[in-house]
Image (cartoon, rainbow, N blue to C red; front, side, top):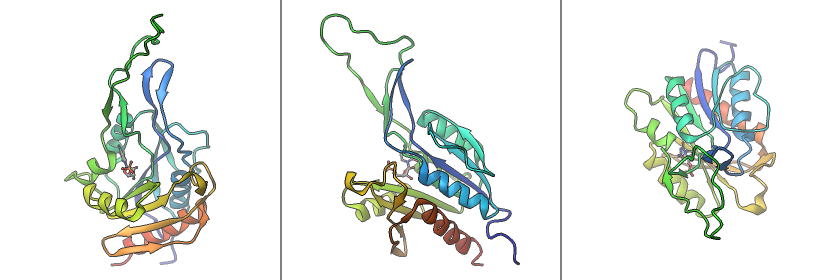
Length: 222
Ligand code: C5P
């Protein structure tokens, strides 16, 4: 009573992009800044949780009061998440690369003079959210994913909820005109089995705070 709402809880959060190596100097990446995931980590820590933040390569500072595990690739991120679990809650906010280069060349790939570009063969990365969602012993009681889409937002979020066995999906429109990718504001909807909740456009820190309060309400309901 009167304590912080997430005191005694462990929360694992992924954030940022992943970098998938092509050779020692090149990689595949995406435009995720890590701002939303890091803001959630900071808000959860401020609410008293023990926070393990598994972060891909970002340029923003480690949030205060959290333990940060820095990783590069999707496979490293999955390993770090498994090591960080068990937890009461996991929030997968990272923009994990769907594909990586099949071969991570040990030497820099060179032009061969023929004018023919090298073939880049892609293979699918592990899905961290789905792996944890389907895991018997590691799945937390509350598993939250994100769905960043440029079209069919709610349909895509609902199918992710089922396919990846998440409890909630934070759905956001990342169309170029929204400024969400890399920006400071976000408009999200919370998609769960019980329906869709629309939130107004908010600062990413405010989205984080609302999400943390919703998590605390859920955990402290009984
Ligand atoms: O990329 P996608 O839109 O499917 O991502 C939806 C959710 O799944 C996000 O929470 C994201 O962090 C997670 N994800 C993941 N591992 C992947 C791809 C996505 O954890 N390889």
